Length: 326
Image 1 (tube, one colour):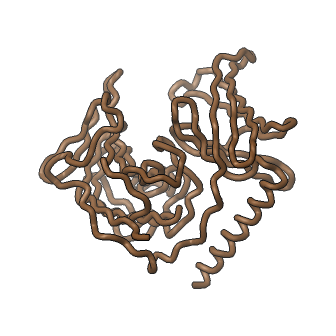
Image 2 (cartoon, helix red, strand yellow):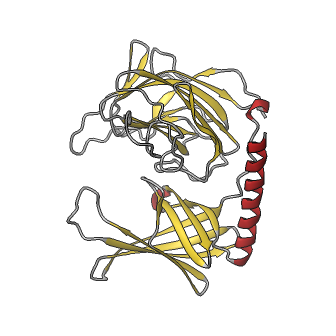
Image 3 (tube, helix red, strand yellow):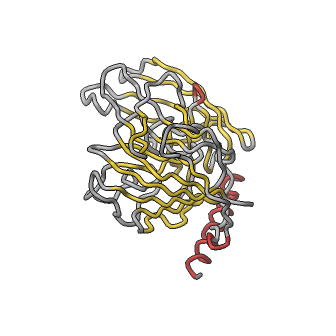
């Protein structure tokens, strides 16, 4: 109870602080972005001791800090510096974001430049201010509806590829939903989503990782709970059961390759709980925004459950969801 009260006070303080900051600097806070092509993104702007800083999620990948953040007239200028991970000798690219805000909406433009200063790519994006995180929910008082069996153990009824033109590695064998990916040039395997869409819920399932597994469970198509072969590795927000790049598991609870693992996931009022193999590794923690690969950055609309299938092999079974009854 003491912990819950402290958390409530902290959230209230953060909410008031964010409100006060927004009144002084309209760019402050967290923003749900829509990028070119409809991709989901996120921007967080903060200020400490008079110094502005920011972090971004640009479509896929992780939430990362930017290099510079500064006000220039009525605009916010942010620079990002990047280099391809698989090309260590490639030149760095500098991308400048120029942002204007009007109330709770923003518009922005981007331009990329090479080391010699020559521009070579432009883009645009829009954003909406994300409301303050609500108080920590008392999960003991949350009412859940009747269980919905999402996977029947026989076929893919109720599921479909997000992009119909992608190759499908998904099939059913012996009551198990399996994904098998063939790594070949120009072959892109697809992510699998439910036909049904949901708001908040509790989800229980079993998953079995394979060698170098890298999959994920997207809640409402927005938040990825990571599924990865991370047994024996140091704690990291990209490990099994973590909220990808956002929340690190409190303990390492994953099992070795080839063993079935249980996941018990609860999403209520933008707070996440993950119980992996009986251990609570994320305990009713606030979620600050979408994760890489999200279908949308809008955290207030229903969405599907989707399983990441474009990377590696992975197995699932006994997928059961109980929606929150409001």
